[in-house]
Every structure is written in C-alpha cells, then in structure tokens.
Image 1 (tube, rainbow, N blue to C red):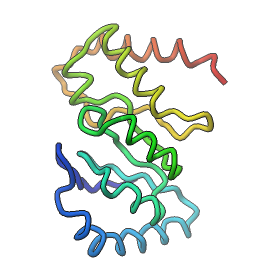
Image 2 (cartoon, one colour):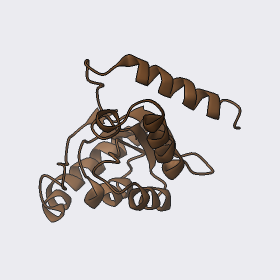
Image 3 (cartoon, helix red, strand yellow):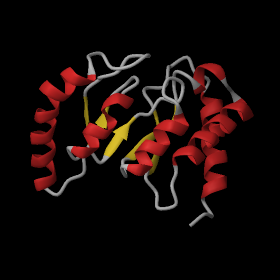
Length: 156
C-alpha cells in the first residue's frame, strides 16, 4: 500500500499524456518489482483519477483506493474497474457521504455504492475514502457498520 495523490476534484493534476510519458514507466518498474516479490499492489490516490486508471492497471496495479463517489461517476467507474479487473477499496466517501448524509440516508448511500462496485466474484473492499473528521458523530458510523454487517454477514 502506498500513496500518490494524482487527482483533484475535477480531474488529474497533470495531463494524462504527461503522466503516461513521465510517470507510467516508473510505475511499471515499481509494480514489476513488487509483483516479483509475490505481493499485491494497492495505490491510494485522492481525487478524480479516471483518466489513468486503465494505465495503472495495465502496469500491474491490483487495488485502487479510493474511488470517491462524490466526484467520480460510480456507474462509469465501476464498469471500467470490472472490465479491467481492478479491485476497488472504497465505499464510504468521507467528503460526499459523511458530509451530506446521516442515519438511514447515509446507510442507503453507502449500500448503493457497495452494490455498484461489488461484483459476483468480488473486487471490492469496503473502506473509507480518507480519514474520518474528528467532529463527525461516531453514532452514525457505528449504525452504518452494524447495518452493513447485518446485511452481508449471511451472504456467501
């Protein structure tokens, strides 16, 4: 697991062409080295990184963290990630879900994201998109986890 923030709220911090020209070869070397150690690769990158997701997967990325539902269209992103068999670690968008919803509405939003990204053969890890702000009421988070656990514990 390592972190490089490549995205902003609207897209990449640099052009996709520049990223592919300069950084893609470096990621290829890094990912090849890590895979030679028989390890999986998880990359954290905040922001909208849709323009480089396929390039990252082609170079060997196994898991992307996070997909931020508030700034990346979940249905389009899910379709791409499923097609290229890229595992997504996300689901609870700290900026979008936790800032805009609480209680049952928060649970519905997160469950919708889970259903959008979770495939029949997996490919989804439920996680926060970033740190939970200290001012967030913990009771919403506890309720969210209890509800998700009660729904998914018996599914196998």
